[in-house]
Length: 94
Image 1 (cartoon, helix red, strand yellow):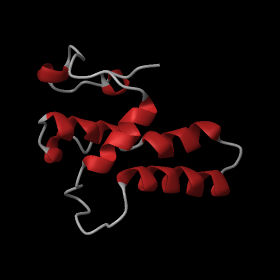
Image 2: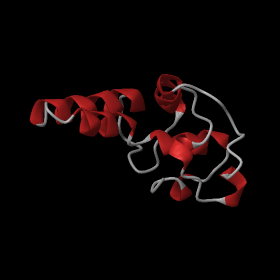
Image 3: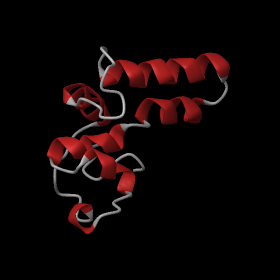
Image 4: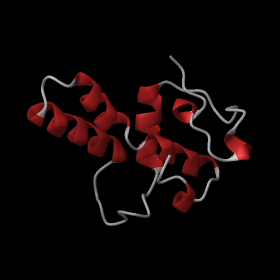
């Protein structure tokens, strides 16, 4: 599955056509390693590590909720929009 529009939740007209990029979810998570997150500028590990760390923490606490583990893994994928020119303060809630 390729993702061109973050889970179909385009909140801004500029993103409504979902034509800025096309990538797999893993490509998206890996690409976030290029982003310096303005909400955590002092963190010295990659954003992909944070995604896997979150999913693993949820797996330990809720092993029966695979959907919740997936949400933990992808919770920051909307931040990819910042690599395509969207100001970071506009992508936190996507």
